[in-house]
Amino acid sequence: MRARDLAADFPTVGLDTSAIEAARLLAGQNLPGLVVVDQQNRPATVLPGTQVLRLGVPAYCQDDPALARVIDEAHADVFLRGLEDRTVRECLPDQRRELPVVDPSATVLEIAALMARTRSPLVAVVGPDGSLAGVIILDTLLDRMLGT
Amino acid sequence: MRARDLAADFPTVGLDTSAIEAARLLAGQNLPGLVVVDQQNRPATVLPGTQVLRLGVPAYCQDDPALARVIDEAHADVFLRGLEDRTVRECLPDQRRELPVVDPSATVLEIAALMARTRSPLVAVVGPDGSLAGVIILDTLLDRMLGT
Image 1 (cartoon, rainbow over the protein chains, first blue to last red):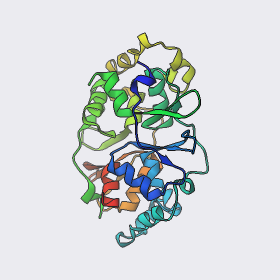
Image 2 (image 1 turned 135 degrees about the horizontal axis):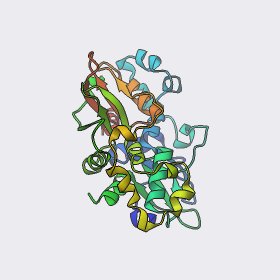
Image 3 (image 1 turned 120 degrees about the vertical axis):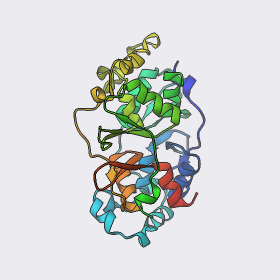
Image 4 (image 1 turned 45 degrees about the vertical axis):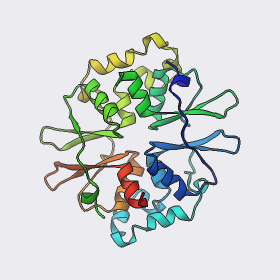
């Protein structure tokens, strides 16, 4: 079993998609994350669901639980405003991380090791020209490995 | 809206649960991760799904894609053997990470910031005695925040 046998079509977002649209897509489809593609349909980045949350959490709250706590309930819509005003591109972290991308011949063990290392529950499968050929999600991988 | 309003019951595993049982639970229920509890039902650790994968990926493959690649398809069951022989306790990383745990009065923004920071799509809600009161998953959080 190789990456090509596990890959499926999933909705993607572009760098200029609004952050609120990205969050709604994630929530509405119960996806574990989103692949962000450039205009040539090449993966620009892969956002695990937890990192999509970052799009809406004000920077000053991200690393300081005390600050998140003092913003009282009436202002939780600060989260939504953060999403509405920005594009995905504007919300990406400055620091680029290892992109969870494999080629179609990657083995199950290779995909599992990549997901574990990058902490990404989805990996993008890319063809020889670098364009997105499909997405493998953690559930699919586990189901196939365990036969559940 | 507070943590207590978002928390739900989810199956947990113990430190002495076999790793294969933990992986099957995760796969069968489409959970984003597992809370590992001690004998007093206090969260010992929270394992995002990607970290449950670690239980079955041989240590020598985890950080080296080249090694994972050379293990050919016929030996992918090395993954399953890694799971069958060990308990969850034996598979936990040596290095303890920040535990994604909140008290029942935590705000939505606090939970979102914690998920983003710890990269965990689930957080444990604990009562005053430290025992598990429920689990909040990313999907629930997003659905409530976005009204989807």
